[in-house]
Length: 346
Image (cartoon, rainbow, N blue to C red; front, side):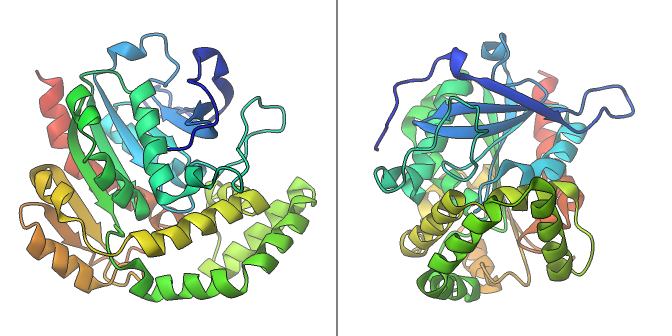
């Protein structure tokens, strides 16, 4: 895998703001907001509870790590993961996909030119990116709980095949939310994406460049109005902030590039990591998901009957972070909590 920087030192960790407030018990609900170098790419990490830069990180016993869908923007998952942390009371981390968030202008961290280093931003590059992060920040013998959304589920299935990671730590549970694991280009949304990328990508990138020249309050207003029209009502602030970050030429280019690569690479269902981890695997499918038709749910349920698979009957949408963060957090916590409580008692 292409790399453009040497192994980062702890001095490269750049601390930013903290998000959200304390809960009723007085426990801090603030997420530590960091920029680090992972596989040569500026990467944003939000941490609830113990942070990746804590001095005693090597003593970490268990952590919940979220792997984003595409776009891989951390703040989309802020409300969802805050609720997971509030309920489970174990460290919860989420990292951006390589090239999907632009660091502050005063940051020492950079995003290498996608034209010079395209391999960093492919689906395979994103898998390598997560492996490098886990290698550096998750200590040996830690219990790892993985939560993947959409293509994040496919990335996790690739992580589960890594023998070095398996020898070093224990993946206790993996949760796939609205997983995209097969035949992506044949789905309704896959066909739409291919058409959009083929016909409108250049104009989209150009318009996003114009958008970046606007003052911050204009950007927020435009995004807020657009989302209200699309969603039929007000959306949460974290969704607006995330969407503003998304409308950036480099980010959109990397997001679309990864998506087109997904259309090529995610076709045949890779059964092995699912079967090998079936008893530790939970999957939640949407009933009206244009990225993953119910026939895919049927395929996987038959292929991996030992895994717990659920077909949504509540109307939750693929992009659950826009309107169903708390509800999906409850489902994830119901799956993870028994094992975590058992681990804490030993």
